[in-house]
Amino acid sequence: MRAVESPLAAIAFLTRIPVGRLVEVDTATVRRSAPYFPLVGGAIGALGGGIVDLAAGPLPPLAAAALGLGAVALVTGALHLDALADTADGLGGATKERRLEIMRDHAIGSFGATALVVVLVFEASLLASEASTWSAFAAAAACGRWAALPLAALLPAAREEGTALSSLSLLSVVLGLLAACGVAVGARGLEGLAAVGAAALTALVLGLFFRSWLGGVTGDTLGATSELAQATALAALLLA
Image (cartoon, rainbow, N blue to C red; front, side):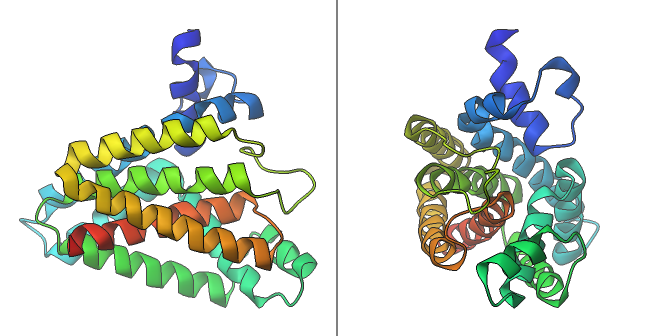
């Protein structure tokens, strides 16, 4: 059981698949499971992309892409989309304290709604343009799940209580990067490295922004990083 504890914890943390009863998902377990995040992300992306590939015959490509994104949202409980919306709503705050207060509010405001529409339309358009959607989505989703890890390891928590990934070790970041590279290259060949590079660049830019904007990261900003890195990774694959 110890050997599968971390993979199961990663699945329980990132999805709605009911494996939590098989393992105790506490903060320490989640941190140990971080290197498996790209593997779980790759599986989620492959599932969503496979649905797009299957539906793209009977349906227009954009409609098929919408179904694939909807399936991923269902499997994950829209975890990262919710984080993206909360983070975007925080843009309406004038001070750090007000931004954090807004981000705690479960209601979605105008910034959050706009961010969801823009990112989902952007991702759907990219998926609709891919010849092999399952491989592109698998690579991008794996890289997106990794992108939050260096921010969790290198930036302080913006709130006193921290996040589930606070004090993440650099070893976990490196192991996660190797996993993301493995999924991306395995799915797309060497062009998969373009997805890794795009995700890393997204993490760098957002990390600098969050440090200035909030003084660190929250669970919402880490989730938003994953979603935005996934989107830029998809774009990089299409350009590659």
